[in-house]
Amino acid sequence: MKIYFSDFFNVNADKIEKYGAFNVSLINDLPLFIDPFLLFGSKKPEYQKLHNSILDYLIFLKTKSASGIMNISQVKSWYLFSEVKQNWFGYSKVGNSGSGLGEKFGKAMSSSMHIVFDDLGKEKITQSSHLEKAGLFEIGVGKDNISDFTTNLIKEYLLEYTEKFAKANIEAKFLKTVKVDKVFFDYELERWMPKEYTLPYLFKDFVILTPKDILTKDDNWINGNDLRGDFTQICNSIPNDQLRNEVFNYFRKKLPKPPKNKRNTQREISEAIQATIRQFPEIIKWYIKQKEENKEGAKNLSKQKVTEVEEAFVVQITRFVELLIDETEFYKIKSDTSYEEALKRINYLKDVVENKDGYRLFYINNQPIKREEDLQIIYRLTWYASDFDVNREVNNGRGPVDYAVSKGAKDKTLIEFKLASNSKLKQNLAKQVEIYEKANNTEKSIKVILYFDGSEFRKVTKVLKELKMDKNPNVILIDAGRKTSASNVK
Image (cartoon, rainbow, N blue to C red):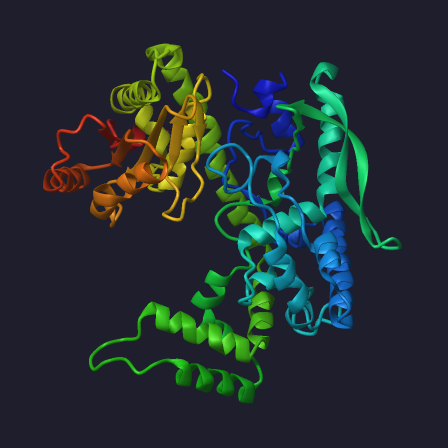
């Protein structure tokens, strides 16, 4: 069965590992992204060069922003990029198509460049400037935007990196010379230029490899959560006594007075912190200074995160698929309806998880993976050999359902994955899928609930009885609890 780059292009996975690239799934995006701080923090000259090239482009954008002459066509030309879906990383739960950098991002960035990057190229507190600063101000720029922007700005390097590996290790029949748009920026013409490459080619598109040592998961090293979480420590590091006192005084004034014998809520504290940062943007520079001084921490954390993703979505999935092939009829199912096929496959997954050591798929370092997003990706990676379409539904204004399995417009089954530990399990089971069914013009849905221990099992069975759903054949419980001692779980 073909899932990964090595499978589709008939290349030994060890060669990809030795080259330093991540062996991506070509069935579904994996939850990794490029962190620009890892370019800054690296000792590799080519990464330092990439970091400097990003700063060069930011200087160009800031100059244009400060001039006040930028029109909408220039914003589209300089800020708007499609997602580089060919690297197969990101936040898509089905396939590899993300939203990319749209007009909202372009307008937010272009109008705030001179504020966010006020000391660009003239830093006094930090060692350098960083693209991630844009995500620390409330201008509608998130970590996915930062990742997409970074990937586009270093796309030329990634294409050359892939081409070098492909020509040396992949048969010519799997390669194609393609013209890629927006590869490098011509500062004289002030426009992005195309370039040709010979690249791995599949599903009518090229594929890009990415070095593992610039990837991470969850958050950039420089991120808003850490900024707010370490707010007091960061402010205490400000050497200017007067400024430090003004910051804390302003923060205290922004905190609403809580009711008697109560404390401020986390939301109130976060809002007060954000207001203080807007008033004293110097705080961000002192925060970044702390982050810069711990480059090794950034590299070690990213390595750990990438290893976890590799273990869960490559190593464990490979073992799991082998179990499905050897122990079940999972890949031989040919049903007449989407509901029948979806239900049969889920029951096969249940059997392998509960009775054939498949539970190991949901553990890393003996700890259970309790993220519904990961469960959904795992399900998608196992459902690639079918005549049915498996897609994540678009948001119909009522929120997206996890998956819709269909064969034609009139045969559609919705599948919703939940963890028993979900605090809103009862609410979701009672209303959510039924709303989705109406929105998607179908009356067929399946609810899959994963539990890890006896207390979770008791909770979910109680909820199902209260909702009178305990005997519904379309509600599937999967026991992912360890079946052997923790010392035997790899």
